[in-house]
Image (cartoon, rainbow, N blue to C red; front, side):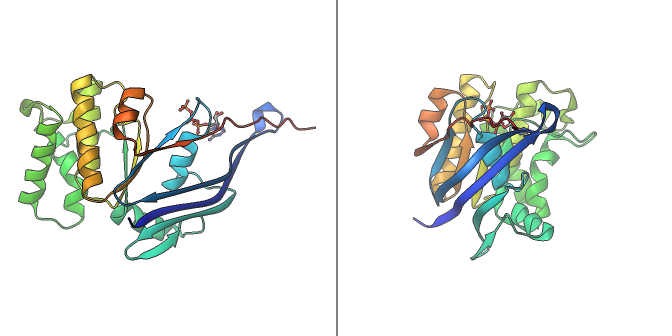
Amino acid sequence: MTIKIRVEHLSKTFVLHQQHGTRLPVLQDANLTVSSGECVVLHGHSGSGKSTLLRSLYANYLPDSGQIWIHHQNDWLELVQAEARQILAVRRHTIGWVSQFLRVIPRISALEVVMQPLLESGVERSECRQRAEALLNQLNVPQRLWQLAPSTFSGGEQQRVNIARGFIKDYPILLLDEPTASLDSRNSAAVVNLIEQAKQRGAAIVGIFHDAGTRQQVADRLHTMQAPQVLETP
Ligand SMILES: Nc1ncnc2c1ncn2[C@@H]1O[C@H](COP(=O)(O)OP(=O)(O)OP(=O)(O)O)[C@@H](O)[C@H]1O
């Protein structure tokens, strides 16, 4: 298996200024390796730093020290020190982020919302459309909704449109932030299938799943995280 992500000695402390500078060392010397074709699920109590680690892997949070090596376009790129333009390139070509929340753009149809990332990478429109339709079908989004803007959709419908958008491109790395949260069992199973397909084509996946059943279905490995010890200022 080819390694796609290497997290080395990563640390991140939040300083809570509204609590007299209390320090919260959420990540302390964190290490993690993820290979092509495997799904690693971050696991631990609420507040143990799962989201902090996932967001750091997408360069949304800047760690204090350590390295995040990403296999990007046949080379290795270190994300903590990377420049903004390199991070944008990584997000465009290498790392996909799938969460439960859809950023709704007014007047853009669900089909367009799903197609957009693939269209932006230069794939022909008819192929994008075909792929988007297949995904919307797989995620049980009724056809009558495809031409409508998702702003009036139910929470679950919006969530599934967002998941279709997240899976439309074959990103080498996928970060999944509770994509099945609040989905019913039928739709949750559809997402589990998409994850399985992504693994089979060789994606390296890191995810957070609060539901124990889903976790068990998708995880090749659990990465257990410990709750941080709060450090009061003297
Ligand atoms: N931007 C921030 N500023 C200050 N504190 C933060 C920030 N982000 C996270 N924290 C704190 O860091 C700790 C870890 O948060 P994080 O969201 O990573 O935990 P989690 O394991 O994902 O929790 P949950 O399972 O509840 O989603 C929490 O105590 C949280 O309050």
